[in-house]
Length: 565
Ligand SMILES: Cc1ncc(COP(=O)(O)O)c(C=O)c1O
Image: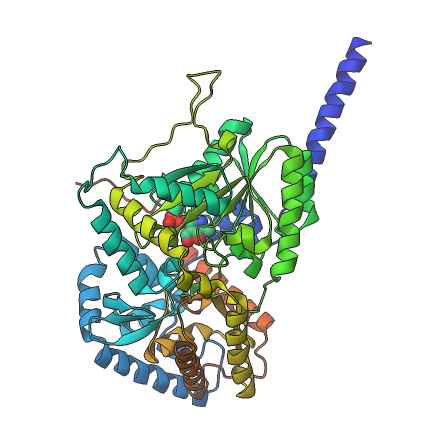
């Protein structure tokens, strides 16, 4: 009898585990971003290959006439870059071999098959000498409208941040760089952050990545559960646990990556007992389930993918409900979108409250920052009942007086009328600008459109092509500065006037006309998205075959050949 009972119990446990496993599998997105291990496995095996001189201009089998037009356009652009950016290019050449970060960003601006030649011939230079309002100026004196947004930090124009830094520095100068104790400006900062977030406690860090780490660590500490849930494609900084796929050399063992905006994911949250927190990056409303696009991966069309404010708000409400029911900590990662969508951030914009919110980028008033705001019972790093059980978090520079000074100025100005007035009709302003630009692009039958979440924009390409990434170089030639992800992210500061925007729109149109004139958007008869995908796959297999058959069979993981002699 006892054996039967034990057997039945065991069977129930096994069946329950199988059910949980199945429900989890059903909540994985079908793309590679939804399958971190497979994505890493494949990424490690993608072989390098480059196009030779001829193939560079006819990777899509364009006829000789089109390839010749492309070549002429490329050479012309290269000559213009050489003439316009000599000092910047020289200094970049001088440091690039020793500056790992620069090597990385330079290499991944365009698809790798094209990268070497582009780096050799289209040298824009990685240096700037000054900024003012919506513009930046390079070492050679060229002024650009800045569409990089300094990774999203620049919300109100560069002069605004210079003033925050200057006034903030003046306010804390007497204390200087003393760490470990606080400058009094922090009291105001904490009060304002509590008001803005609607949450009881605040902790201060040095970057957005660190803020996310701390929020997750606290959620694990207080719930006693190990797993964090993130949604497919969402970026939360470069800490390993939030980057389980390509980019992280080891597996993230305590992360579930689920489908965004899908009932299957809600089912997982309802059924599992090991989930500490759900991390949401509200920017994903622009492209749920896919990573932030980058021109380095742009080998085909790029389609608009946004779901709109109302649909995403509805999803957040569903998440809120299930997290409350299951005592799962709901964390909004507002490092990027906080303050950009509304003065009260994504919580205000989508009308949903989180248990914890992370902020970063702009809230430092131009200096490095990460902030966690949370409910009091979640923010405690110790237990009243068990004093040895702590959740340790410190950081040498975490309340640096100069950062606190600049933040103080930022938060103070946020309350001022000029800034408050910027937020009025914010969505309508950017909606109208995007619509107007799209209408003009359509009127000229140019094969691109923009989509956006307020002031964060993406360029979409409506027809298949292997050369859309070239567009970033035409935009630069027109005096528009983009970040290393190229046309994937155009980030406007909110102080762009209608006149500034009109000038940007003119330049976008002019760059697009030049791109078409030079043949990069040749609409070949057999050029379908599927055909391009097939062709890239064939190239990869050929390259893989070539590298494996000439005997370079070393493990893709063992690139390091030995210690320093
Ligand atoms: C949503 C989000 N979280 C976290 C981070 C990481 O912030 P940081 O680069 O300051 O470490 C970023 C950076 O882009 C971000 O966009």
